Amino acid sequence: MRLGACSYDELKALTTESSQRIIMVRTRVAPSPTGDPHVGTAYMALFSYCFAKQQGGEFVLRVEDTDVARSTKASEQAIIDSLTWLGLTWDEGPDLGGPHGPYRQSERLERYQTSIDKLLEAGHAFHCFCDTEKLDAMRKAQVAAGETTRYDGSCCHLSASDVNERLAQKVPFVVRMKVPESGVCTVHDRLRGAIEIEYAQIDMQVLQKADGFPTYHMAVVVDDHLMGITHIIRGEEWINSAPKHQLLFEYLGWPMPELIHLPLLRNPDKSKLSKRKNPTSIQFYRDMGFMPEALINYLGLLGWSLPSGEEKFSLAEMVESFDVDRMSLGAPVFDVEKLKWLNGRWLRENLDDGALADRLQDWALNRERLLAVIPLIKERIEVFSDLAPITSFFLEGMPRLDADSFEKLKTEPAETIKVLQYSLWHLERAGDWKSPVLQAGLRQLAENMGLKIRDFLAPLFIAVSGQPVAPPLFDSMVVLGPDMTRARIRHALNALGGVSKKQTKKLDSEYRQLEVKG
Ligand code: GLU
Image (cartoon, rainbow, N blue to C red; front, side, top):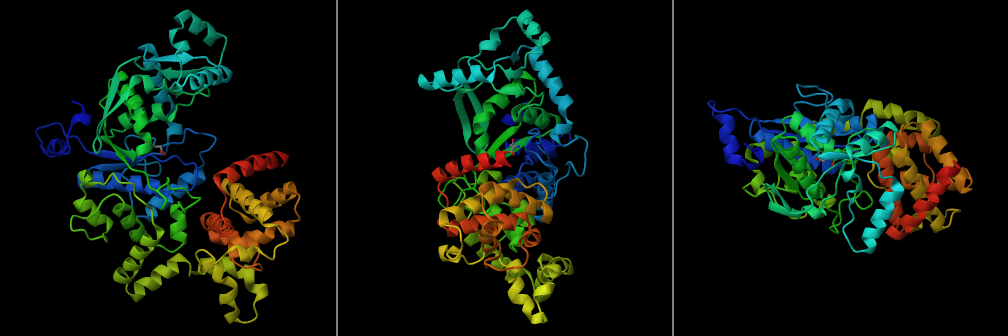
């Protein structure tokens, strides 16, 4: 029996009827550790968690780190910390282990190879030796002819001896999946019903890259099967990939899990939630002093509501009455003002004065934090009461800034924007958030831009601290942490009128040239 065809009630019956084979509901969240832990990841994790837990099932954390160049251990740790902070716990994962481990894709390569070999053997996949030049030309010709760009199947028809010869000559190759030439593929989505996509629109997806690593599409299918995932809850950006995955499940003779694609979170202008317009890192909301209960509640509210209509609910209440079929498919707008309002309710209604004092202490009024700040201000204060004015920016959210805040600088506004934008890009890639590392990197950037370090750092002082004079900049950035620092620089750029998409493109190419210089 295909699990995909199994309704929620049927599945429930199966899980409770002891005379039948027991099928445990298992869901997963599968983030790629390539950046800050995104609220969208928490959103998918929350609904996957509630769906499984409401039915007594299990929830798995899997780290999809096959993009070797972009994946980092720091990002994986940040994901684990953020989801834990939110109160979402998993039954199996890279930190806990479990019967279906390992839970990091980079540690599962031989499993993907077995499936790739199986697909090649059965003729469902083929070696493709086309180089970038050929693929580029193919794409250009298709664009010129107004056709869907896709692999044209050239290598699909190579004879076995041709393939073996090229393999023996060590010609670089990728492995692609075969796709039927005609017909319509129907995938079922629990919330959206049948989705039909013509096979002619589906690309012969690369399953294994030239470096031997699987692509997301190969790894996700193998892992969802081997990890016994019964329901895949993920973002709607993956709907177009579902036919490829369904074909792979079929080729490998595995039952297809049920698909549930959730709408993506949006900025208030309805564009896809992006850090340019809205902070997206979970840690930013923690550092801003939001309560995890409120953030989880708000994320839940973006796609679902209690039958009573009450907007404030806890994770346990959500699990208890969760019903995926009542989820909304409307574009969920992530509205920080509404989140703040909800946080205010949590803070007032759930924390008595003692509990609030404890939370504030945990947040930033603790000895550890004070000990990080003291060396930065000791030389600058005479009496204890000098402390508050000089350190208030450590406790603030976004400093009050407008274009006038940058008026007295030596740099022209266009140059100031460059300094902030380039620094932001640099800091987005900074692996080690330590003072000497930050200092060396930004000094190099100033030099590459041909700016005096004083003039270069001045806009950053204002962005980070809200004032032209402040405790040492790099140490302050360390105390504030990467998420808050970067959010403040983005905030400063917005105060200066923002950077348009066109401008970003231009700046990006200039920045790349500067980086090469470094
Ligand atoms: N690694 C993918 C992502 O981060 C997972 C998508 C999925 O859930 O299948 O979006």
